[in-house]
Length: 355
Image (tube, helix red, strand yellow):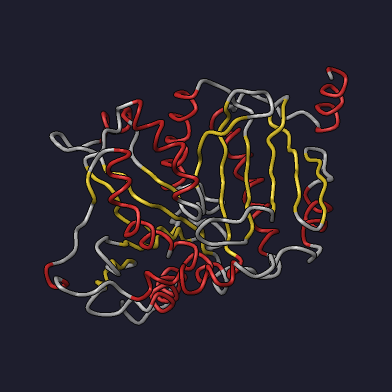
């Protein structure tokens, strides 16, 4: 890797050390490494923003192969991928090129792939804590790829995207693939570590009392509505969900007031997951976009992430909420630049009058 220590190289080394990614399972390159804990390749890379932006920023990207030869243009595939993702990908996203993107950029004579994705943006302020957190969230990629590929290839179509080097033939699965069962799940049986910390109330005081946002909180969670044109996007952090695999933890959702039919919203979510896997410059991809029923009835795009109990740290909920708030702003600016965000008080007053 060379002697010079950049933010990117420090992040990569931290992740490799936490995963115990060593020879012969790992291959290093410039600002990247590939790792095979099992049958699927995990690719980790760091990319520096090169336009002189301050503070210095590196995009950290973690991808695990999952399925290849997928029917990305098939409406049934698009819908099934969208509705299954939040249950099968609690800490990362399912990403694939949409039919439109593939038609423009896909290699002739080949079929697209679906991969698992996390991203993060590393700066001098977060280099000490964010890479370890990302490492533990994204370790669920190879764990779930190994456990889910047979069933998901039947449900979605395509085949398992296994590309293990011949030099690893006969090598058993790495013990890290049992981390969820041996570490996350036992801690998940304990009392939820976010309950009663006072963090939710503090977050609402900081983020939910502005001109564009209003919120409320208790010991077990929070809800913040933030202006999205003449409507509101809704951010929720909660502790009631018990994940079937990981147990207790922090469930965070962002719901966007863009409505449509099931197929339309599934298409939108696929495009959003792809966009977030490339570069947003602001917030990490630690979950996935998927359809969900709205307060109005029709489905709307929802982003969901789940942080296992074992990854609790003081102040983390604040960052999760801030990332959701930034994601809502990014969505509005990317998709609806012509809309002007109205003051939250006016939006809520109009809604109350309509009721």
